[in-house]
Length: 636
Image (cartoon, rainbow, N blue to C red; front, side, top):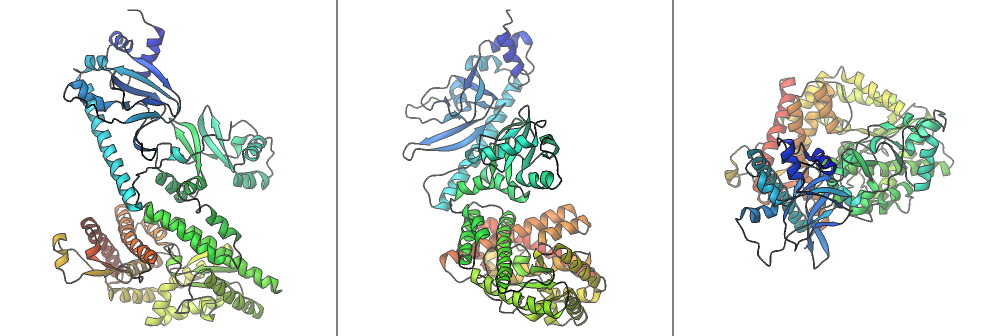
């Protein structure tokens, strides 16, 4: 037969696809001659809802969406995304097989090209000729099953989101809906100067480094400062010499949540979007937050520009971000990472304003200092502005230093109150003498707690050892950490007393069968006092025992895993258990705050679904295992 070059090219494009795999060359060319390769522009409708399907479409290049259009509201509800190598048109297979007859009133889905698409149209005549091949049967059955599952999952998620938001219109947001397609890019061999000029012309803070459409690296404004200006690199040097290689990227079909999670967990601001290893766009944190809530974008700017008069407004802005994250069901640990960064910015701004206020009074900082937070903020688990928990460490104990930091402590505490932080009823604030001091003073204070392990001192130590550096001298912080580490080397009895205290507060167990849960005498559980506090204290004791003084609970879990105190599986189980507990706790507290109800950490079993009860039982079991490890270490 005549081997048409066009058909040969098309055969090369699909020869390894399951639909054509294993077919002899002549037969394959015969089948290909009956097919047609079609090109679709971006946003072009590939299959219309009212037009009968006469075959299948195999995507060769590009991305497409299967959607239903809401004629009333003019919105499109995306059911699934179809990528390279996948087929469209399975809904017509029933007609092709003769097992159903399309109704005249049937509303079919439509398919639209998300990007430029090249697809092979395979008429049912070709499907008929391949139908007897068991491999084709298996492939089509598998694809239909997978796609059916994906569509059901997508529909279920949309319905749930619509219900949660009180909306009639379901929605799904993907990266392609928020990304910027016009990307500022240079080749690795092009100059740094060209990259800088592009940043200026495009008004962007990053440039991608691309070679043959393939992503090689990224250059940000920070790279320009740290790798060019600071090091004195010539602007004529290659852009590839200062780029960050193999940057984190994301597919265009990924969900909004996937992108925001990557940005915050990886600590990046720019996320290149790729398809088939080719750059098709870029998405930033600003893009993601703007899509969800226009007011959210102003939050960080409000923090950075806050003065004494505008401090109270920041709380409202941060609460809007929290509300968005909770509504979107972002995993709780990721939510805490995001919110902690915002609160840290706020506190740093408060300390900065406090120092500025003293400067305006003619008072200059006499030596380095470090400002720490404790409690929920120290643990990176604060989602509402509660009371203040903080302390100050400064370099020396000269009289002028003591006088300055006494005044700075009062200034910080007052300004935090103005921003929405209530004063601590237990007076654990740097405005109080016992929560500020030089390194020498803190050394004596820790020694007293260690040697005089009264219940009062143990309670003070429990709160203290949730500390985390917020702002100040890193060098001083290292000295402070070394001081504490040295103290802890001789603190076995002190840790034993902390373990004894925990023995008096065992995490409750709910290991009865779920069907009998309502028959228990216990009808509720205090998540904060009965679960979270014992969990934090147990983690705290184990971390101190093995040489880690500060950090968030997740950092401590990772540390103990690296030390092989925890196994890989137990550390994962522990994070999952904590996520479950915190999600229940935060959701309830946030709903109470929004409704104006009294805030409580007591969770009633009657308000939990069966699944939530099962997750709670398993989570408590894991946390009890953590507590048991502490008891085993000290034989209490």
